[in-house]
Amino acid sequence: MIVKISQTASNIKQTFDIESDIFYFQGKVGQFSRFQPITLSNKDTKIKGVYHFSEWINYIPFRWLFGKENHTKIFCLYKNENIYGSIMYSQRGFMKSFHVITLNSGEIFHCYCRAKGSFHYVSIYQGEKQIALIETFLNTTDYKYIHKLYVLKDYNRFADTLSFFVLYCSNYYFSKRFHMTKGSYYVKSWSFSKYNNKYDPKWRETNFPDENFFGKTSLFK
Image 1 (cartoon, rainbow, N blue to C red):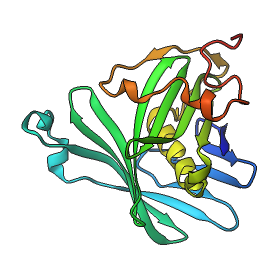
Image 2 (tube, rainbow, N blue to C red):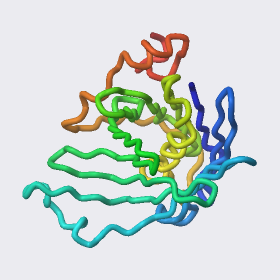
Image 3 (spheres, one colour):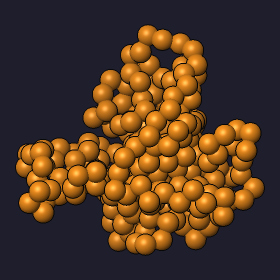
Image 4 (cartoon, rainbow, N blue to C red):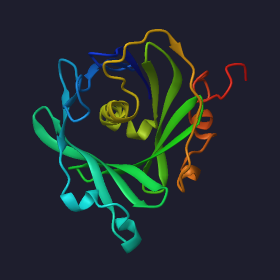
């Protein structure tokens, strides 16, 4: 499945259209703060994320030197008002961090970010298997980002949850609140992480060979 997440408003509001061949959602992240609730909804389904403060010990720097993990940026997930799971940011060491999606049904997904040129990627794994990829084009107009989510067919049932995770990432890493600028912006970015090898540049091409533009470092390749 391919899901396109298009930001429709930036500045005072942060809103999104989320669409695939089989569903359409609207999304919203906090207009004033990244600690506000995040919602993804249509007439049948609503997923809401509510910020949860970590224990104070998780904010102590360099705990990983003693074999500890810091768990922060936690959002508890509710699906149609029922507790559904959580998303958190885990730091395990120097340049060793990733996000974890944990569902009450028992599934756990690890999400590894990598910035490379004009694109930001998130490779999503269940165990040792990559099951999804998020691509974000860093060049924007009025700071309205476009994201694409690719999900393997056997994992389509998680497409709404993974679409919500795109909103979570946008909330923390891309949303520009109260900016006073308009126009086009061209950005290059590179990240340094011990998990950079989790990004497989051939994964999208192998599993979604008919797609173009996203996933390419050049529009002319």
